[in-house]
Length: 192
Image 1 (tube, rainbow, N blue to C red):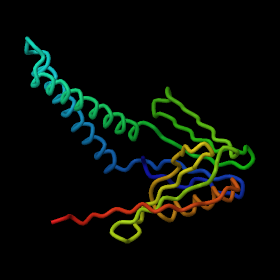
Image 2: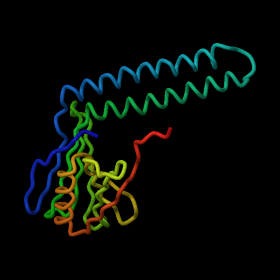
Image 3: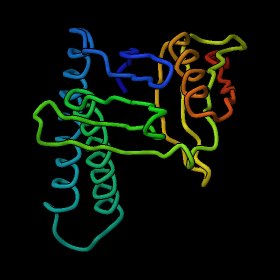
């Protein structure tokens, strides 16, 4: 997910939009695509060499080659989808008191793909801010999600602590739903 910035903030409306990708981010996505293409080639080679090229009974080596190759192909497909999504799809989130809904709009750069998801305020249980705790200290990263009354959640923002706190509070004010905080702790210390 690309970082987002606040585009508009009034008493009745709050809009978050994706930032323009920097050269470093585009370079990172390009390297990710190149590595993914190599993993895809490796997976197809495993399937070909172990499972399809050899004839005869399906022994353990052929089954392992087929399973390993399919695993690599599926992994590469997921990573490629994620990389292309970051590169080609721009998202915006609009919280509007007048419309009584949250509108999540996804546009492709080619303008052929467009998705609009509307979440009514009545379906929202609360706004949740996930605080990441690394080795006992809060990080600068936060995540804002809408928790629905049926248990599902929709991620609104992931990134800078100040924007997440400001956005979470503003969404809470506009929707008149409670704000909750949840901590996610992890450790980077290596055992040894």
